[in-house]
Image (cartoon, rainbow, N blue to C red):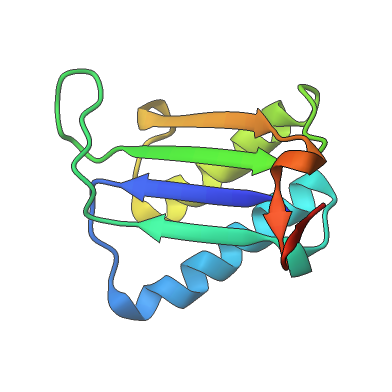
Length: 114
């Protein structure tokens, strides 16, 4: 049930999408100790974004999960920034990540909720 939405203002080659999605999925699932079976990742390259008053390469990520705790976010932020920096050449100081803990009753799946 974790979900990552990643927005980049840079391009990603079409042949890189699948491997990038797989690495991001594994990174978040492993960091949170959640089964990757329930992990969802959406990648949004070429999104108009501005950070610090300029349009240099930047990224905005949103991580949502049931049972997410404040103690999990520092390690996850470090892991995600490392992947985004390496894969997409975006410096960590130009990446914002928001983290959200979602109650089971507010997360729908398979015709119901968790």
